[in-house]
Each structure stands twice: as structure tokens, then as C-alpha cells.
Length: 158
Length: 208
Image 1: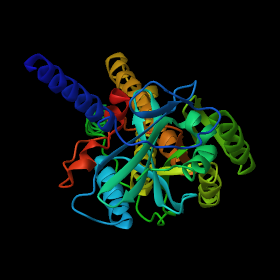
Image 2: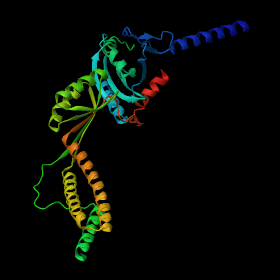
Image 3: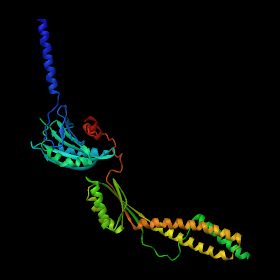
């Protein structure tokens, strides 16, 4: 009986561990990427890359202090400009699921090249979902229009 | 003879002083000259295709009666007539995204006037010394020739400097860069909003 109880307890713990691991895998983002991007299917994170090195990755942070999209877009722009990034442009849009998003593009010197860093923000209640993309200026320019289109298909999940 | 020798010595003395000090007062009665200015415009623009943009900019410069003074992969230096500068700058800017622009204006009027006055004075002194050669003995001739050689060297220097300054006022310079000039412009600034401090290109690439 004692042995049976021990086995039952161990089995429950294992199940709980599996469940917690599943929950801790993180949110599921979806997006129809441009053809030139390939997803790292086996990675925990939502990340994609082109053959010539333009990278894209999504993550999220806590919306703290709680604020709306215009606030965070303004704060992000001011912070990066204070650091020396040059604002290349900004666009606000609605995704296919009617979620508001804003993209800010920045230029900066990186090594021997000048790079573009693109930050797209979605505010989902207590979460800020950030889709970041970066690449050398000439390579980013080639995928820029397609990427903007793809971002409208981004689903940050619930 | 003593008076003439004293005169030669006096002129040589004055010539030496003028050569050493480099002072040449402007001739009296000169009219005020038009202001002469050196114009330099600097612009950093990002373009998707630098080769195409460079070729187009060179064409536009040629149309404005200018010429390229320096061409490299990420940088061109153009010289254009000053009156064409204001019309050409927006055409160059239209080729890409302007990251940075600046204009510098230096007044060269006084510098050029002083150089012209120095040139006149030294030339006059040289002519006077030449006049003494015919009547001087061997010792005086050698002394006069030595002073003349020094003066000729000074004259060439002044002429060269004057040419440079006149060239600066005759052509406006446009420096166009296709890359950030200051490569270390990114600094660390702490934001009170914690997650903003994680927005960084190096960090993004390292954690990708």
C-alpha cells in the first residue's frame, strides 16, 4: 500500500512537472512572414531570419506602469533618440484581428555598417508585446515593405 | 658714397624688419572690397543604392557648373559656385534620408585683404632693392641679393596662401556622406522604465 501510494505521488508530481513545463513554454505568437524569412521552428522563441541576416524576434514585457500605446511609443522614441539612435520613421496600424500596433524604425552605426532597428509594440492589457527586427540598411530596405505587410498579420495571442 | 651706403643699409634694415615681422600695412585710399566668404555644407544621407545616388549627385553637380573634388565609396566632396549652393542642396537631400546637415560660413575678406597688401608691399621692396644693385659694391651686392632671395621666398608663400583663400571664396564645398560619420554616437542612458533599457541592438543580436 505504501509503495502504491508512493508511486501515485511520484506520478502526480511528474504530471504536474510536465504541465508546468508546457505552461512555461511561453505565449504563442503567429504571423504570416515575408517569403524571405524562415522561422526557427524548434526554438522556444518566436524568431525568424533572412538568408542575408535580417533578424526578427517577438517577446513580451510587463506593461508597468500601466500605460497605453501612444505613451509607450513616445517613451521608446525619446529613450532611443537620447541614446543616439536616429528615428527613421513611424507607422501605426491595426492588425487583421483589429489589434493596434505601432512600428518605429531607427538608424544607427553598428560596426562598419549602418543598421536599421525596427520596434513594433502591441499593448495587450498587462502585456507589452514587442516585435523587433534588425539588419544592415541596404538589406533591411529590401524586405521593409513586405515586413510592414506581415506585421498586420501578427497575432500576439491572448 | 657714404650717404648712398647708409641709404642701402637703411633700406636693407627696413626690408629685413618687414620680412621678419611679416607686417604690411594696407595702402591708403583702398576701397572696401566685396565680402569674400568660404561656404561649406555637410550632409549625411542614407540611400538604398549608394552607387546610383552618387552618380545622380555628380550629374546634378555638373549641371550646376560644379565638379567633384573627392569621390570615395561612402563620401563625395563637391565644389560648386556659391550662388548654386542653395538650389543644389535640396536636390542632393532628395536622394535619401537626411540624417545630419550643417552649414559653415567663414568670412575671408580681412584675410585676403591682408595677404594682398603683403604682396604689394613685398613686391615694392623687392623693386627698390633691385634698384640698388647697379650702384653697390661686392659686399653690398651680396647683402642685397641675400635679402632679395628671402623676399622672393616670402612672396611665393604669400602668393600661394592668397591663391588658396581666393579658391575657398570662389567655390562652395558640399561634403556628402552616405554613412554616419560619428561611429561611436550610441551611448548608454538609463531609463526609469525598466523594459526600455532592454531595447538595444547589440543585446538583440546577442540574445537572438
